[in-house]
Length: 640
Image (cartoon, rainbow, N blue to C red):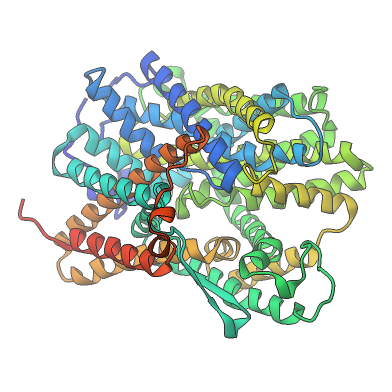
């Protein structure tokens, strides 16, 4: 095995993907899918899945597991097992990442069953996760080479590249590893003081009263700044543009027109005049964003059809190749025949198995929408990363179609809603898993692992997580009650309203159609649809934070624009530091979630110094200090 000092410049582009040389040469036989990597990876999947299940049910957000998983994997392999195997560490983090993917999908959909007053069943939850997860893994295989090889340098895959840097620096040590650790420590301390001890607010915001109470705010998080630095300002500006259209255009417009209404306008139960900007966004604008995201997905799929066809042809050639020839390369996927068999199996089980009872049309919709949105998700995370992948938006789009079809077929009432949410949940799992798997495939391509081995390993993580997450959802529901103040389950509440709205004929289709119009508009004038649509769907607080991180990257680029070698060196240093920021933030978020799960309140800051802790000025000052530190650290040149 031949390992280099660190990732080459070509890892981020500048050459054709087919010409890129992986970090570890593919002419080797390094242990990859070992018993150690399987056991550790499965444990990681269960732990990350548990933390994200609680966090997601409470606040509607989940924490990416790949980056903290990579740090822990390298640490365990080197510190405990005394071996330095980057390929094996990649396998561990890839398996562990599936815990977050499965948890995020299940908590966005399954709790709707409880909100309708029906009973949850562990076997049903586990089967949904197993079937949806299988489709998510299989359906990225035909497009893997296109997304990770042919689009090399065009699709960033920020978290996949950050994970690659951590795996490499974790194995080689040296200055690069110290940079990652320093970023992780800063991210850890910053997150623990703000999100844990609550010495300052994480999302300061200000109302703009002359603009119908519109809000400007920022998620002052180290992780989002890191993501913004990694993806750069070009993508971030389109996302921010979408958010500006939503928060300074659509929300004030809705408030202005609806201010004279004397009765609530569906979906809300409050008068528009009494709603905050955040409530208008949640009740109305997100449907517009969901329509735009779905449109972007359809446009992306149409453009990808030639690629999908060529990918399938390449896969067929691979099936026809001899086993001897295939075994000599690490560029090997699960064979095409198993993709077809797997898809047919999911269709038949969905159709026939009584516990699911979605029927033949339901089985077809499961496979169709899983394939469509899995391809879209795999591409989308190449732009914005797994953490910001709008899984819920794509699931809403799915539920809109599924619920409408079921209603036309006469499946209404509780039985119809149950069929719809089961179909939507399987598709949601497929979408979420496909996004996470695509990031791991990028990391595997950069590092030099075997795609087929990682794909098998990831499904092992799904198997373990399907049981553990399902049990935790039921346990939390029995303890606190899903839909209570303790477990608000905001995403699942939205899903339940979508399905019930379609079944009862009270869904505001006009909002979805407006989103479709925005998507078509972007395509016609040459604006990337998905980033803009994401901006419509996401809070401006999030997109502004990512944009600010991109601005820091832009300032570094401008400072060293006349010195190409120094620019490359400082850019890599900034990416390493940003990777550490994301990792430290994510690890701390998991620790905070554990405290919350144990019922331990560590948020002492808001009671010790309430005026300082609750002031948005405090947040902005400390956020500014973080940005200055990031710029100064990244711009400081070294002779070594």
